[in-house]
Length: 461
Image (tube, rainbow, N blue to C red):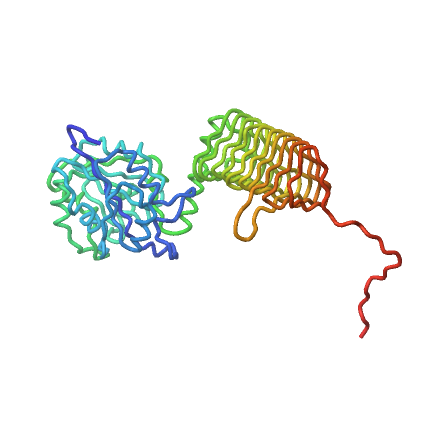
């Protein structure tokens, strides 16, 4: 982003903290909100501003942090020694090619709900320094914004350095600020660590700006959650619920019927047509599209799939990487794995697993079956307990089933094998050879009855 009055915008993201209170072997910024890391949320927001550059300061487990977002067009800057936010920004802008009138926006990777809209208010400021503040009923732990009688921002005092009167202030610092590059460099060089934590505070530049009579503007965030950072698992959980509730409310306002907005999780994108209904406890991951009049029963998990109009996904079904054409019935307790495709009006019933297989129009796999690496034609019926034996211990093989085929219950189809259209397979068969069109195939042992047979009995001690 470039403006004739303010020059170019550069973003520095601070992501080097250890996150000790998370009590985790994973870097704090890689913990997830709605299925994506906090860092990913922050970088998405930064990218939406279209800055000239994004620089991410990393330190603790920095390799893991960098590798998690390796595809990003950002500069990774190492902070080997952590000595406060001021020091982190010093490291972040070291080597930055920027003009004196360019602006530097400082963000934090553990503030995942911050949106670009709020930041546009901040970067629209013409002040030399602009900062985001928020009013809190309980400001414990936050730096307080101190103003003079006219309301002019004078400085920020951290909780540990504040006196009793200053601790009564309810307007607090979010840590997010923007400053003119030339002034920022000069102020950072003058930072000192004579404070309760013995660190270089970025917030001290506010007092320097005020002392030099440079303009300082506080942009007040009305939404406290948007500027809330994560320090522990409890805070992470609370932000997750806020994020999910907001997604659910937006979905409901857009016309989707939700049984309970507090009991849905969207960990990606969910695109719903008209008159879609979703019951409680459902999880949507990746990119999910639901056509008009789709109904999703309780406690389903849908991931990276498209469910066509008029379809029903019954309770406790898992649908992953699937395209369903429409008017389909899935479940309950069905599992559709990547590569499964359902033509219109296909039926997949309870305790059925489909993997890398196409099920033709109006075909049914209703009960307790496994169909993998297969192509099933139209109007066919696979009875309960049908299994396509697709794996020989080393390689996968394909089963082809034609149109209008009837497969009896408890049948095994040992791939590679082909069953022609209009064929019938007797229940309990193990099919190892192709079945021609219209043929009846029965492959099972002949039944014997032995009169007077005595069942073995336990020997008495």
